Length: 143
Image (cartoon, rainbow, N blue to C red; front, side):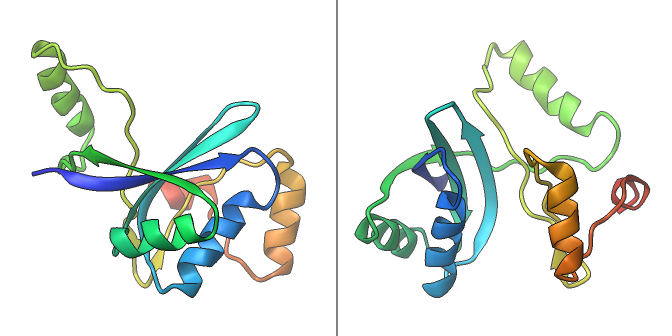
């Protein structure tokens, strides 16, 4: 019942994340879920993709350090307290959660991703200038 994720180690500099997503896109690999954690020097991009073996080989062939880890995917009731109920079970069984992230959920024909930027105003301006739809909080919370 485990799922294999890949981890890609990235220098913490502009363009490295885009390089990974570009390589995957060119190889026809679809990202299903992701998490990005960083330090001052490097980041760890954790991915669940539709073809992990191809993704690992492609990224390694392009000079990236890639690892594989087993994780567990769990359905969570979409209601207040849904996640809490699962975390309580884990707590009551003395099981530590090292990290977690959400799976991409589709709405209509698009997925929704949440980003953090170092310059929010500039990011919004650039996205709008390229006709990218930006969801406001009230719409996002009711999806």
